[in-house]
Image (cartoon, rainbow, N blue to C red; front, side, top):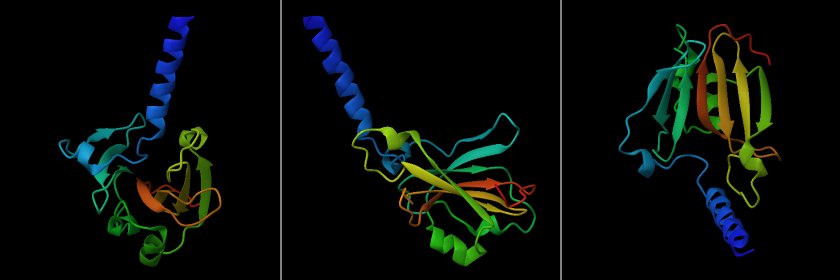
Length: 150
């Protein structure tokens, strides 16, 4: 009986510790690590980059197409800034992340949405929330074969 209680309390403490973690990696934790560059299983280039204010890491997949609108974008821009620079997308999808199911998680990474641009690729935002709103750019997917619709 006593061991079961200790195991239960330990597991609860571990779970509670995971609930308060920052959804986007703080700059202080990654300050000693350079931006990682690698290749995905489908052969696309992949790298992590700091947001423009240095507060979190974002992701970039693929190489920009010639005359790509995406080259003027920076991780950490708001959706409004992105749309002012490159225009509105032709399609969008939203989805719930696993963090949305964590009890008492009030961070901005519970929901994400991805916007599609024909011949450019897609952009991933976080922070819009289930009730709508504007997000923060956390991912750029360069894909010249993108048809612009989900």
